[in-house]
Length: 321
Image 1 (cartoon, rainbow, N blue to C red):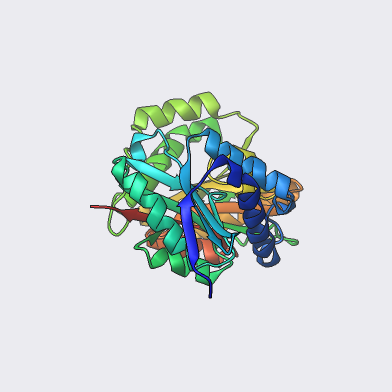
Image 2 (tube, rainbow, N blue to C red):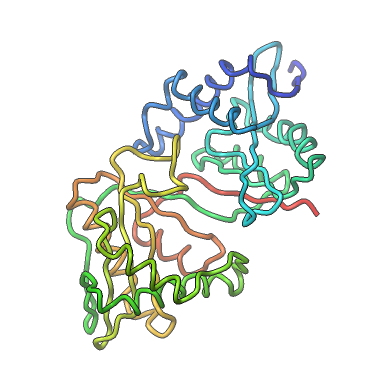
């Protein structure tokens, strides 16, 4: 086989990269038809890559006998939460030869590490096991999952005995604020070990008081023995900062938040809340629903697939130490 040639990505490579990305996405949509069809078109894929370059992305191109077989672009996010970071976004790479991803990363990462950016994130489509495997074999691990499912054609919600699912009132703001803190508190524990600072209870109260009547969000609470012990929020996927661009299905809702207090877990209230959000999405005319979770959160990584969510992208992470 002719030798793989590697070099830094140049603006003139946009056309080749757009073709690679469009082909990758077309293959992804064979597995997940709800993903946006527009990005199968080369000109739409090109615009997505142009945005990455405009944001300062750098990377590499791989060719064989003069034909592009893979590209990779990573950009910095100006957010202290992520450390000295580089992100290969959902549109940041494509490869007709998945093994070439390892070589592309080797070239691109040399520059990133030289720039002092040692926290590397890659959002990788799940449809191609060889592509995912190539990332694992350059030291990445699974951190976060993006997922979707079709909106249910028939109602899903089954409310267990002793559980009440309803819309909240302003009298529930204190309970909603406490639930807002329960999720980050859980994620601080093993095996997630999240270091993201949680909001204060006062901040959570204030946000709920100010945003309670916002029609963009559909909030539900779950009661056990008359006490609010869980909440869940649905919205349009346009409200999500993770499910964007090539990863944003058309006409989709987003299951954006769910939490149950520790003492009420296992009561069935969480499953009932999740199903309620899915039924709300179907009732509002959405055809798909997205969500996402930390894979190291043992509760959510088991609960969401049980509700029918299928992984569409993996967020992978590698820390250079």
